[in-house]
Image 1 (cartoon, rainbow, N blue to C red):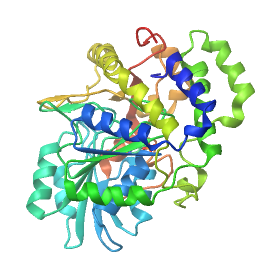
Image 2 (image 1 turned 90 degrees about the horizontal axis):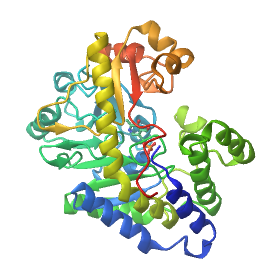
Image 3 (image 1 turned 135 degrees about the vertical axis):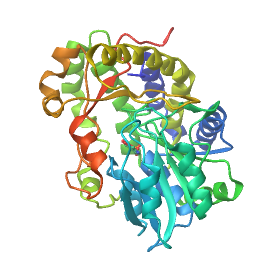
Image 4 (image 1 turned 180 degrees about the vertical axis):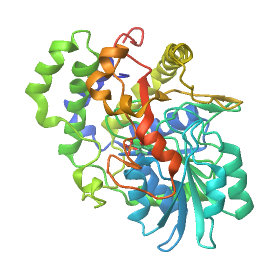
Length: 388
Ligand SMILES: Cc1ncc(COP(=O)(O)O)c(C=O)c1O
């Protein structure tokens, strides 16, 4: 929904200019711009938030046998990054105010082998136990990784989220706050950790030309399907003619916990150019999301549903507006979501390690969220960056 015609133009320009695809200056420009916008000292761009996470795991020197504590309510690609580094994952439960890790749960899972905590801010909302988790980590000498994949642009005490822990990751995958089809950024404010992320980065290859082309061709594909004013018919036609380029963010291998051959790529110039264009518009779209969230706040008030908690000192960026509804409603969401709400409602997450089915014992609140949390959209087709 944040892709406009000007993004299609950027993609087309790079499709007809293949000689510059290895131009590292555009990427450095994107990284510098993201770091500036995010208020972070260093930023490194990869081909996914998950790859940015692998870079952070490398930077923190997490070794096989080390333990990380993370919420048992996330996307499967998050634990995969630890699994592939040999790090033992210890899951903790979430709280149901903001869907973040519950600090008391984390504390009960700390062992002599614990080296790091991954906290996440889901759906664009700053997690309830943010400072408590950071303090807990400090007391135990643990590193903190902030997963801001959903929450780019949210603020806490006047700073963008992701600047309180040791390292943080962001995602520009097509369903997120900003969109380069696939992409992610790792940030840190620590010189030594930045040097380590850079080591990982320098060893990472760029994607091959076929994947870059596929990704650029997804820009018009997404635009015609979801943003063009006549997407209701043009989207299908354009998709039918170009469906061989459609990208699925998580491969079947990743769902099975197998590291794909193409994993671990850093971001090449054409995708960074899309990122730069998206950064010009990101504040506008976050403002739209905050405005539209009010519609769902009111809906909750009028229909007797609990609103997600906005912790003191925070401003969400509202990737979605999450609400706990009756399990029967969530089960039928695909069938009747649009009809009843006049909006495309989504159902993240549908399992502990979405989208892979399976049970993680001891995560009772996560089970409730899996059965009951639906996500109302905060952007629609009519939100369009002025002049784009
Ligand atoms: C909570 C969370 N963290 C991290 C990621 C990974 O981001 P990316 O798709 O850019 O690799 C996702 C992906 O959806 C996610 O939902």
